[in-house]
Length: 493
Image 1 (tube, rainbow, N blue to C red):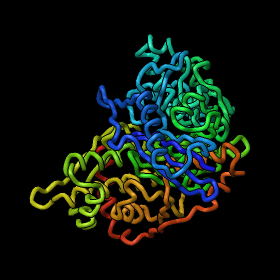
Image 2: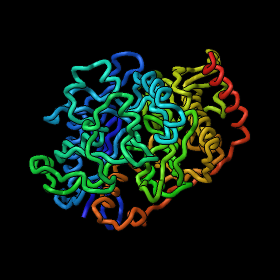
Image 3: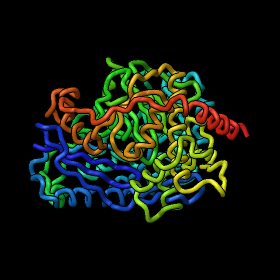
Image 4: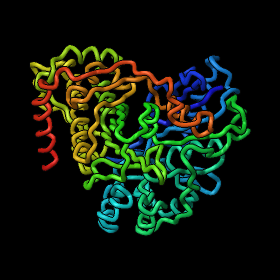
């Protein structure tokens, strides 16, 4: 018996099949091989085509099946992880009305700030645990204000994972966790936020049916099953934003447990047992996958937009013919502190942890007679690690005190320089696991379909690959403090 996980990322679609008994990956595939482009029609805008996502999902599944490592007919349930905070809108025929305004798009910042002021800061934070900010509800309000003809045609608004589930099943549903990441959920009253709907003038009929996150969100349509070689009627039994899903995949389920990832964006995600919030909305609180009215497990999320995206830009700009592994080797050849070269990695839209300010990515203190590629690539990895430390200190202000952080051995954590710098700068050990969002989504499907009796049962074979402990914290601390002073000076100019 197998489970299929789909991870709708910003760069590509990843899919995996997991064996129910071993809880291990049987096969995995990615499509496309090249990173999917982000459309930026204006500075600070970011869009992608939902229809292209769907085509890529189908191609990824067909590629997965073609490996011949499993019988697709033995897949019993499907789970979906997806890039958070995006907006997808469809008409009554379930046709996409415009490209998705995705997570790193900054156009709705002012709308969200005005909503925060009008609803009231205390009211927003107490009920929403966040400012409306630049999240999905504000993105929908932007469409309403700037594209009224499109808005009139909307039958349902969705998060990206809701859209893929719709294409698989024909059903449109959502969950409390999804609505909370869109800043559409009232935690105090346990209902869709009347404050946000009223302020933005959004009709509640645009919101899909709310179902438990671990539950059947529809059954695979006969025609889709035939085209993908799967069994008709199997459930889409799990949908989660990529960061709560990453936490699930790392068995981060209980208050006090913390996960990290450094993909296109960088995230530290800690589970709390309280309805907690940051008064400045620099970090954000959403309903975790294990949230319920009885167990108010929330996920406190620090997001840095420009991590993997910064490294990708540097690769394409400075060493387009090199592999990431080669760049990591280059970085290891530079000393701690990169001979004084410093990097602010904030070039992928307004940063919530910087109060929605946009500094742009910057390489500072360049010495044409000293610095070479090794310094550049180490400085970028150090700058990203410093950004994590800056955000973690904000989380510490809000009561999050992790003793260990769990991360997947993937993306930037594949670099020994980055992983050790992260540990040295934060002062917190990191446990590395074989981990992938698509594997987490598959195991989530097993929980939602009742194949596993509990979330804990789905991770009985979860094993740490490597543990990293601080080694160079004393050397890094003054270098980090210099970096922090530079950043904060930028923020006040």
